[in-house]
Length: 482
Image (cartoon, rainbow, N blue to C red; front, side, top):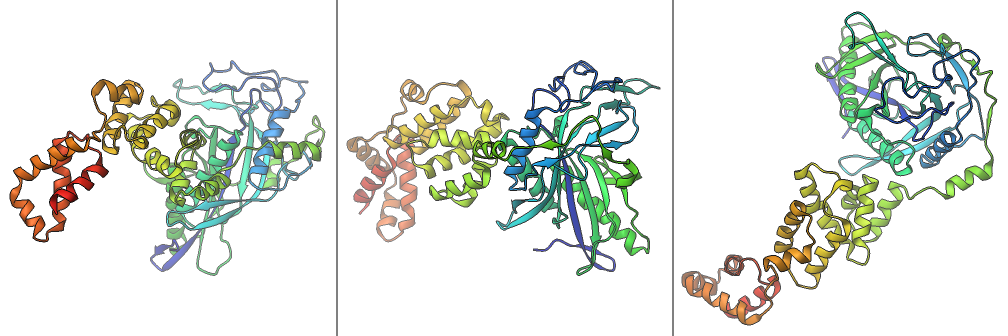
C-alpha cells in the first residue's frame, strides 16, 4: 500500500534519502594511533594530530581503509581503486584543525544497492550513491558549567564511513527498514558495531514532499538522528510540516533541522550549506589512495556470509521465510541457531529458538550472547524430546528452570522425576480412572460428540501430572473410548 500524507488540498508523496555516519570498527583513529574505546575519560585518547597541533601530519590507517572496502563489497557497490582525501573547511570549537579531512569528488566506494523487506513481505531495492571515509569531530558539552562549554576531543579523528543513499524511500517504514538492514549488514561484516545509543551510528534524514508525478521539491535535512524509531518519527514530522507549509502558499527553504524527540517536531538549526561553502580542496598532506585489485579480491574472498545469503540458505533448509528473517536479524542469533541445529531438525530448532527461547530472553531482558542457556544446553533439551525422555509440555517447564538456575536439562529431569510415562499399563490405568469419573461424557462421546476427545486427553494428562507420552495417550484413549 502506497504511503501518502493527506493534506487539506489532497495527497502528498514523501521522498526520503539517508546519509548514515557509521563509526569504523578499529583500534586506532583514521589518521593517528590514538585509541577509539568508547566511554574513556574525556580527552584521554587524543594525539597531537587529533588536537590540530602545527606540523603534525596525518598517516592513513590501513585497517580503516580495509573496513570501508569490506562495507562497499557487502553493499554490492563499486570499489574505486583510486580515491582522494579533501579538506572540508569550517570552523567550530570541537574541530581543532579548522577543517575536516573527508572525501568529496573521489570517494572510495561508488554506487551499490540494499534490498529491504517490508512488513507485508514485499521487497524493495534502495540505491547507494556512495560511501566515503572521513574523520569525526570532537564533542562539545554545554551542560557541564553554567557559563562555559567544555570540549572532549576523544572522538576527534575517529574514522567514519558516510553512506549516502539515493532518494528512493517513500515512507517512514521504508526508512526504518533501510536503516535496520544497513545496520545488520555492517554488524555481520564487523565494520561497525551499530550502537546508535553510543553515537557510533547516526543518520541525517533528507525529506521532501511532492504531488504525484512531480519532480523533486526542496528538501530539508534532519541532522544527527540516533535511533531507528526516531528516524521514522522525524520523517513523519518533517513531511507533515512541509505539507502544511506548501498548502498555506509558502515555500520550503533548504536548511538543516533538528528533531525534538520530546515534542515530536523538527526545528530549524541553520541554513543548509552547499559544497562551495566548505571550500573543498585536495588535502596536501595526503597522497591519493591507490588500492591494488588483488588486495580487494582477497578482502572479498574473506567476507562472512551476509544476511540475504544466510536467509536464503535457511529457507532451503526448510524454514519459513519469516523464521529465516527473524533468525538472521542479528549475527549472534544466527550463530546460536546454527549451533543448536547442527545434527538436528532445523524446523524444530527454529520453532524452539523463535518461540520459547526468545520469550524467555524477553522476560529476563537478556540478549542471545548473555543467555544463561547455551546452544549446547538447548540442544540437549531437544534431544530429550526426540528420544521421548520428556514431552514438549514438560520441556517448556524444564527450559524455564534452565533459565532460572543454569542447570543442564538432564539433571533437571532426573532430580525432579520428570521423565514421561511410556508404560501403557500406567496410561491405561489413568484413562480408566478418568472415564469412570466422567461416565456421562463418555456416553456423549460415544453418541457422536467427537469434540470431547480433547477434553479426555486433557484430563488424562492432568491425572498423570503432564508426564504421559502424548502419542501413546491418544492411541490408548481412542481404543478405550470406542
